[in-house]
Image (cartoon, rainbow, N blue to C red; front, side):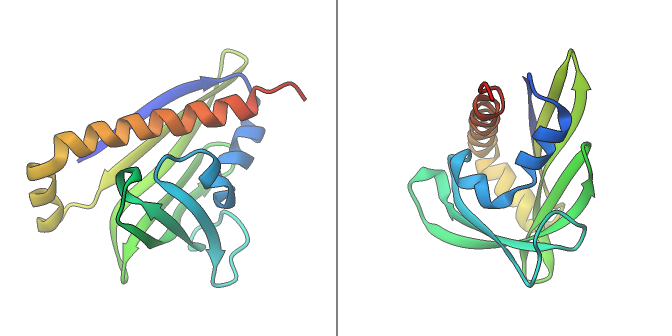
Length: 152
């Protein structure tokens, strides 16, 4: 009930961090989440900060808003957030950053919460959804890479 994709980016880790933690830019990169905004007074990545994302599931629909809460914000290393239903996390997404070969290896990952609903969902649609998530994470990272590797 998890997956991850890593892409190397020829950019310093500080620039990558600034991009992956700017949730307001997610619509430029993600195939499914086309808009996001900080809420409840949050202005950037900090544990407990909240934002909402506007999602078009499978790029077809349905279209809905998700409420998210930052669960890890270690500058230049880790940015993670939980998709919430009420006060319960149902899915966790994140980015791990590691300096490598003159640039940054960026790993985007997801992890479904361990509960009965998630186990049933994964048993029924997991392989298909897992492939979709892998493809979308790869697309997101490649789009970020293109922005980060543009000449200044």
